[in-house]
Amino acid sequence: MSSTTRTTCQSECLCDCNRPGAACQDPRFVGGGDGITFYFHGKKGQDFCIVSDSNLRINARFIGKRNQNMKRDFTWVQSLGILFDTHNLFIGAKNTSIWEDSNDRLSLGFNGEPIHLLDGEGTKWESMTSPSVTITRLLDTNSVEVEVEGNFKIKATVVPITEKDSRVHNYGITQEDCFSHLDLSFKFYALSGQVNGVLGQTYASNYVSKVKMGVVMPVLGGEKEFSSSSLFGTDCAVARFSGQFTEGNSLENLEYGNLNCSSGMNGRGVVCKR
Image 1 (spheres, helix red, strand yellow):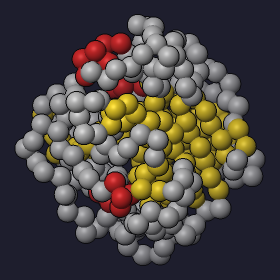
Image 2 (cartoon, helix red, strand yellow; image 1 turned 90 degrees about the vertical axis):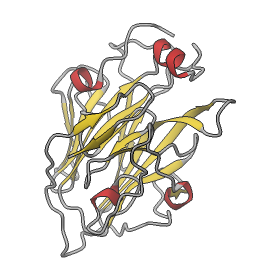
Image 3 (cartoon, helix red, strand yellow; image 1 turned 120 degrees about the vertical axis):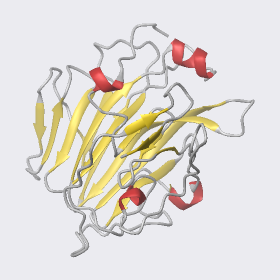
Image 4 (cartoon, one colour; image 1 turned 90 degrees about the horizontal axis):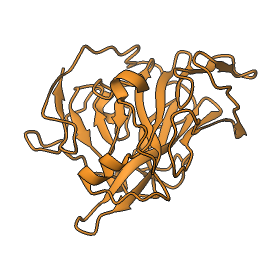
C-alpha cells in the first residue's frame, strides 16, 4: 500500500470530524443533540440505519477486518444509501489497493443511475428531474458536498487506511486492499422530534444519551436495533421513513456551537460536549 496519503480530515477533507453530526474513522460519531462523541462498531459486511425520519432515511454499509485478539470487527463506513421523497442517492468509496490522492475513488448514483462528476474543485452536478438535488466537488477528487434543498447536506470524503494507521492500531491491512472508506459530516434542515437511527436518535426531542461517560472509548450498542436488510432497506426496528415530511414537532435548521473535546483521536476515543 502506498505510503502517500491520508490527509487530515479537518484541513484537507473539509468534513469536521469533531462537530455534531460527524461520522468518521472506526466509526466515531458526534451526537447532534448533545455533542457527545461515541463509537458504534456494527459488523463488517452489514448495513445499519444511521438516520430514520419521516422523509429521510440514511443507511450505512460497514466494511472491516477481524482482529483475532478482540471480540469485534474493526469497521468503517464504505457507502451510504439515502432515501427521501420518492428518490434514492448513493455515495460510496471504491475498492482500491494502492492509494493516490489524484485518483478519484468516489462512486455516486441517483435513482439507480450512475452520476459522472468531472474532476476539479467546484464542479457541480444537478438533477434534471429533481432540481433541488446538487452535488459539488470540494476538492479536485474524493470529496463532495451533497445537498437536498430543505432536507439535508452531507460532506463526504473518501480516505484510505494508511500503513501507519494499520501499524498503530493493529488493523492488519495488506497491500491488496487499503480499505478506502468515507469520512462524513451531516447537516439536517427539517428533522422531526421522533427521528431515530445510530446518529439520528441524538437529535430526537426526548433523547437521553446511553453512552457510558468517563471511559476511554464510549461505545453505543444496538446492532440488532439498527440493522437493515440492505443499503436501501427501510425495515430496521426503529424505522420512521414514509417519504413525506411529518407536520409539527420540527427541529428545523439545527445549529450547534463549537465542541470542547478532551482525550485524543488515535484509537482511544474522544469525549466532547457543547
